[in-house]
Image (tube, rainbow, N blue to C red; front, side):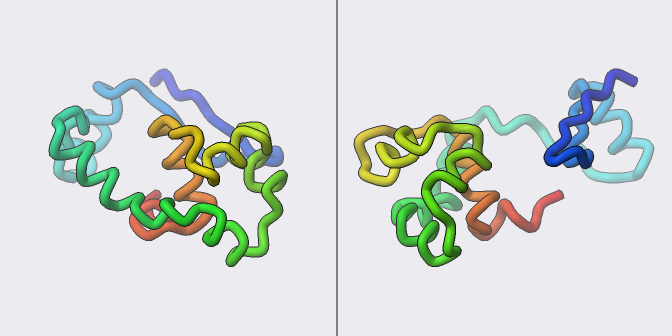
Length: 112
């Protein structure tokens, strides 16, 4: 099996594996096999789930996080996060997911 382990602070946090191997694991576990989210409806659902990120600064401040702390945790610069918070830049999907995860936006924190 070709698995990549991603660690944070020295502890394993994610395991990444090829899609076909993931599908085989799901089948062996008797789980429903999801299809990749490539349809416009799937991306609209993701965007709707992340609507609370519209008030990114408010979410960050409510968590008591400094802009530098959240930015470094997500893997971007504090200045770029400032541009995102001000609406001057639109982050890509990966950054939106990371921000949602770190801020505990419903639908992302609970997934494993």
